[in-house]
Image 1 (cartoon, rainbow, N blue to C red):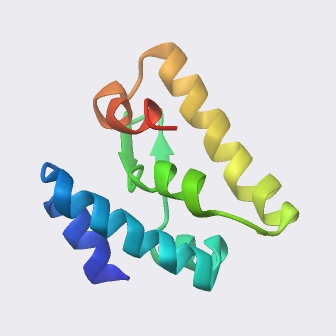
Image 2 (cartoon, rainbow, N blue to C red; image 1 turned 90 degrees about the horizontal axis):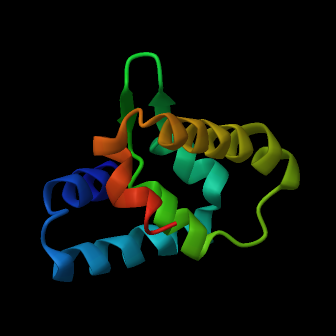
Length: 104
């Protein structure tokens, strides 16, 4: 998973490789579940410092998550989504969110 994360970050500008890498990570989301994948590749958004990490996971999760625990969704995904929405409304972190929010 870590190698895939590095490849996705490194080759983000190459659309052909990006599509294949997203599908590969999406297959991991399906096979392992979003809880396990996000424990290996955590997403974070800090509006105070205007930083974010691994937000490229948002469109992958949207496309590939099925059957996840509702409790996990409510405890982890909803707060992250609310933070992203708040940051986008305030114009915070738009340089790191703009590529991903449009896909979600």
